[in-house]
Amino acid sequence: GQNIDQPTEMTATEGAIVQINCTYQTSGFNGLFWYQQHAGEAPTFLSYNVLDGLEEKGRFSSFLSRSKGYSYLLLKELQMKDSASYLCAVKGGGADGLTFGKGTHLIIQP
Amino acid sequence: GAGVSQTPSNKVTEKGKYVELRCDPISGHTALYWYRQSLGQGPEFLIYFQGTGAADDSGLPNDRFFAVRPEGSVSTLKIQRTERGDSAVYLCASSKSRGQETQYFGPGTRLLVL
Image 1 (spheres, chains in turn brown, blue):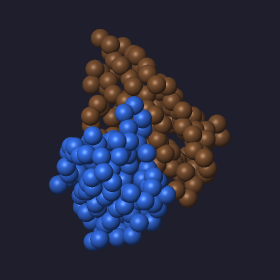
Image 2 (cartoon, chains in turn purple, yellow; image 1 turned 90 degrees about the vertical axis):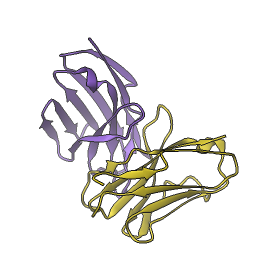
Image 3 (cartoon, chains in turn purple, green; image 1 turned 120 degrees about the horizontal axis):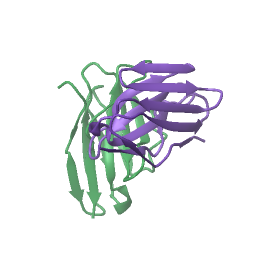
Image 4 (cartoon, chains in turn yellow, purple; image 1 turned 60 degrees about the horizontal axis):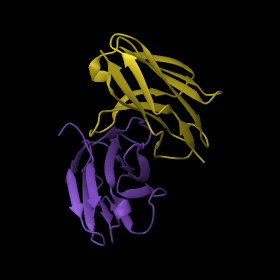
C-alpha cells in the first residue's frame, strides 16, 4: 500500500523560513511532488524530485532522500500570500496517478 | 485556454440522480487524470487516460463511476445513482505525456449530493 505523512498544520512568521516535512512508504517510487493549494482553488505545481538531493527554485526548495523515504519543502522569506495548504504527493512504481498526503495547512502571521 | 478547465464549477443534485462532470485539458496534453478531494484531505486518484483509452481505472470506487475521453481531448466523468458520500471536489489534471511527470490541475467541480 501507499502511505504519506505530513504535519496537519504549521504556523510561521512573515519574513521567516519554514520547513514542511513529508515521509512516505510506497510500492516503488517514480518521483515526489509538492503542490500548493489555496482554499477553494486547484493545486498548483511547486517542485518535483526524483533523485536524492536539493532542488532550488526561487524562494522554494525541495529535498529528497529515497533511502529514508523522506522529503521536505523549504520556504524562505515568507509572505502572507504563502498561507495555503502544501501537498506532498508520490508517484509509485507502476502507477500513473499520484498518491497525496492530507496536506499541511501553513498559517503565516505578521 | 491556457490551463485545464472544468465545468460546471458547482453542481448540486439529489441522491439517486445522474451527473456528468466535464474536463478540458491543456491543448496538446495526451495524459488526463481525474481525482476526488474531500474536505481536509489530499486529492485521491480515480482514473487515468492516455489518449482515448482508460489506461488505469484502479481508483474508481465502484461501478457507479465511469469516465470517457472519446476523441483524446475532453473527458467526462459520469456518476450514476449519486449518494451523499459522493459529495466532494472532483479535480481534473493533465500532463504532456505519460513520460512528462508534472500534472497540472483544473479548478475542480464542487459536487454536493443532497
